[in-house]
Image 1 (cartoon, rainbow, N blue to C red):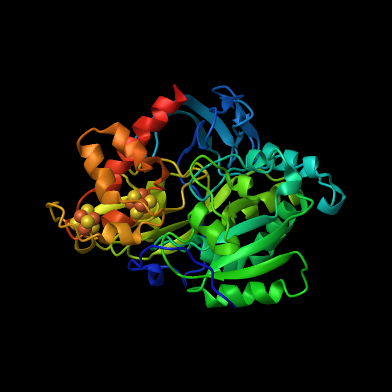
Image 2: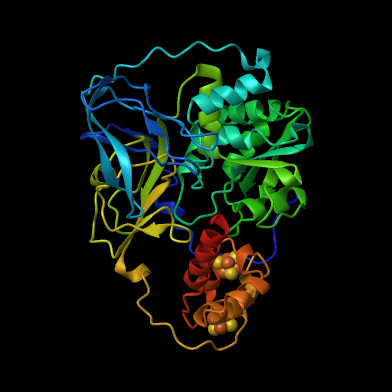
Length: 437
Ligand code: SF4
Ligand code: SF4
């Protein structure tokens, strides 16, 4: 099987051996559940419950705040204790619905669904929208909007992003190994929304057992195939994956649909399957708790709203972490307060020990060009960072700084330890803010 790939990229220490062989463990929430109204890209959801209301598991507690938005559901039964700003893993405050868990887990009656083969494309999109499904790989883009491109008949490929290229993370891998039928059904449903689409399961070749499993499961499928992609970071970034699977290129001003592609992550497709076949809303996700500082690195099935601290307490710490990251070390962000909720987009908590956190100070650029060699967007990170340091927006834009996908490869490889990605990311944020205005 020919392996797909892209130019550039890096091979960081994988760290996946810590948790990859740990079966998914169900963890039940102990304390209150916190549901921020912004767990997705787009308008915040609007609370439809009041303080003192009794809610059931699976009950909508906040409705979508617009077309690009998503509803939020209670993941336990209990009482609405408060609606107030609470801190997110990013450190930002967000209006949140707080539910006191009564530990009875009484569920609403989910609406029975027709077999998806008898549903129209719009029925399936509506089911995904009503279930509050969003991109669970981190972006949080509402999946129903992604499934509604202007020209659905021009979608040629739905790609299941099974690469999980981020170091340490193993939640997608465990889903693939333990619930492959759920993922495959989700992909088949997504493919069935588009009249001319085929499905691709894009799996990095460091997961040969997952490749073998899906090759066997899809041997009689005429519209679904498995594509082994080279193990290299950031293989799972949307633009790189589309190129590796189809040879098609997109830039920052295009959507994957402009290249005839839809890309969805593993957990998202599992949630699509539940939404369309069972009418069940998005209420849980798989989260990896890992890192050298963790006693028992694990993959957990977690109810959205569960406190991060409870997950870390279950896994245990063997040493004081030097750094705790929400997500993986390449694309994640440092967490300074563990009393924050698991959201729809929270994939992992990585606790690094001091040995893994470099304390080296940045020094002057030695013009080695390594950052250029690894940049998957074919940019010149060194020059972009220089432009940012000189506050030279014009040069930054002229050198295509907005094409940066913030993968972190340049910072990782730089022998001078320059904070290249951070500088470029900062300027991109400013420019994106200006575009919005
Ligand atoms: S410039 Fe951007 S895209 Fe290129 S390596 Fe650095 S972070 Fe990645
Ligand atoms: S990798 Fe670092 S030292 Fe080398 S050219 Fe790029 S910025 Fe300069």
